[in-house]
Image 1 (cartoon, rainbow over the protein chains, first blue to last red):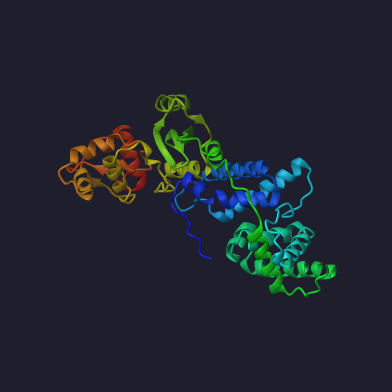
Image 2 (cartoon, rainbow over the protein chains, first blue to last red; image 1 turned 45 degrees about the vertical axis):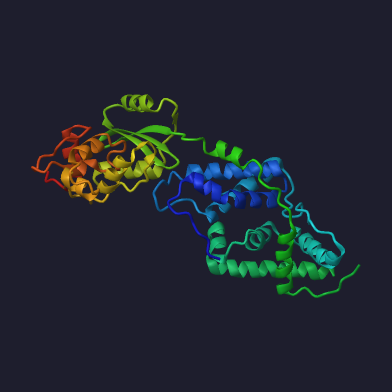
Length: 167
Length: 207
């Protein structure tokens, strides 16, 4: 997925372009509106401080913002001593009968996701919910692109194992 | 209800995608409020740093460097000039990438200051002039007439001189590389000895 990176843009433009992405990410991981806004604000403040790499060719990009946001979410859970339960708070919107079976399967997948390790959860979140490509995920997690494919495959296998145990 | 279906990886992937489609992320209502917190309008930060040339003052925004005070002998004097121009600015340490580059430059270790500039305070003519002089390579000089030509206003050498003289971001926008056509140094806001020294550092003049 090619993503237009607003090169040479000001930080304000960067904020306008990426705010929704980072907010959605924070909300998925926390499930609470105010806290998600807070994490988002902190993420951009950190990025701004970091961007004192004012050199032209180094504006913060989306993977870097996800990386900062990920650390901010961890801080949030640490401070609040809350249990991590990624994704599970996000409500399904549909309940009409034709979709009942599909909804059932979605519920099962979400339940199984919550039982994965935080690392696996984050990987699946970045790939399927934030819809980053492997190169971008590699930049968020600071690992090689090949490692992303391997880990993502393993995470999906573990998800599969959980789902099949539940059948 | 028991749905006994196998979970293949592709089914799991498809279901993950439909979970995403059916999730509900509340819209970020306070985007503009958060933006105002994170990026106060035209917030300027100021700081001074010690280099081999003396204390250099910097005023910068999220867009880049807005104003640079040429080397002086004391930090207080530099900060005083900065506060005169930017009474509402906050004190904040210069990002290390910038301070390192400036220090290297002052030592003669780095000939180019490739830093972004906040053009916010400039008029279009001055912006055009200062943008053009960025193309003069370190170690070389050009005349006022050359600059006037380069911006497409061949008769405007005097106006070019004024635009250079009021350059808010000297060093980074290298107005010291513009000299008089008779071979003399011309003028410099920071004084001719400094102009000479800068050109020597960059290798445009023999020491």
